[in-house]
Length: 382
Image 1 (cartoon, rainbow, N blue to C red):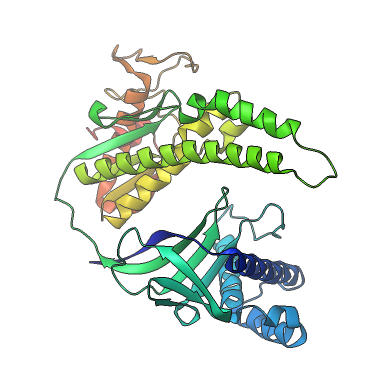
Image 2 (cartoon, rainbow, N blue to C red):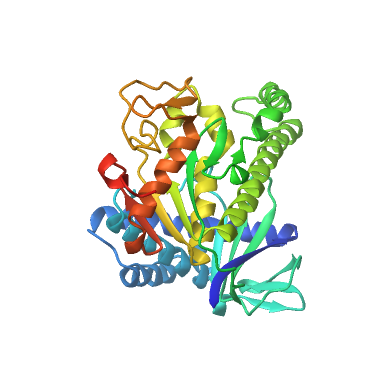
């Protein structure tokens, strides 16, 4: 089976090339903001209408003509796609203005806007950037996205097609419950994802770097070299912890997908934890990133994924499916059923309930489906 994936590589542009890439990203940001401005006057600006406005703007403005038309058109295409998703997906916000200070540098080129020649990435306006080829491309790329991370490093993300490796046929199922003490508690303890606490490990070093950055900051003055070094050190520590969490999520998700055909996932949204006392630990656990990595890998591998709403999964018994009457605070980690006296780890019991809900409706599941947990829905599932 052919699948479309992204291959990321490090690029090392020179001083002149980096300056031109930054200038090009400012032009694309200007085009994005103009599209947002048009959105306020029209009900729904389409890509064709925005393209006509871009052609007229490039005819009038010489500053826009200095940049690549392909990158600017891709910016409008990305904006139109984001606008369509805001209308189709409930809760999705419409695109907003991009600030020069907070927006990330990003450029996208289609096949007619770049070339690969002698191991270098050739872009419009005579730019040639060396690429660090850590691995070979499986096919000719159809598009490339150039971006810069918080450390100032440049990357090129190529969209290619490759043959997907078939996974072994299995019939096992697994239920996953998200938490803070243990990031992912499953029905099988061998597949649990423990909480590593990478940000907590570097908290002291990060605090020293932040204090150093604060001491060297002067309001209204040009940032000094020491301030830039301290700011870079803060970004490096944060990036290190994020990479460690991302690596654990990828390894764990691959292991779960390979061994199970039905994956029942608690549809837990950790956004509300940002306003609680557990905000720092919840951010360190990276539940949202781990959940997204698991779903993407499972759908790509052809596994069945069921998203179960988290309501009442904690207070439902996994043996008799009776809902307990007692209140379970966060400090209570053991579940005790008042009907059948079943005792089990609170998160493990919730994972078994999530799996029971998924197995009850798995005959109608196509890729990803949402199910509401209830006592009547899970009776007789296991």
